[in-house]
Length: 183
Image (cartoon, rainbow, N blue to C red):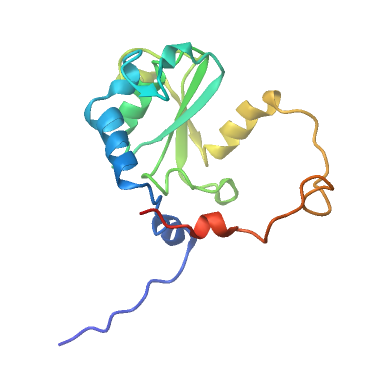
């Protein structure tokens, strides 16, 4: 008995999942070595970019970081530990779901749930953070929008046309750079 193959019904997550990053091989190898294999980003000065040593502790801007509970690519406990190396005030949020579904969970659907820390505390133990965190129903996007609001300016109307006298539009979206292939 032979079963005919059928294409899945198209929906947003499938499109996201099939969108490759197209990193050049040497850059991808460098990235894996420095971030995943050697975990060098958390060691001040162990990673250099253009001759400058990186130190995450020198990043002192407010940061909203999000992990996903069932993420198989960036396990949430690792995402949590990474934000503890930043120098500024951090809000860590844990969304329900996996790598894509946990991230792209639309606020309008009011599905899933998310957790946020209490009083901005980031204890050393991720399990302690989760035990103390507040559970919320719905998408983490609503929490991010509330967190982001004080950093924004006043709302302005969208421009009626693209470009300006000085900067004319080059071509329609998405632009040829999107179609460039790395070698």
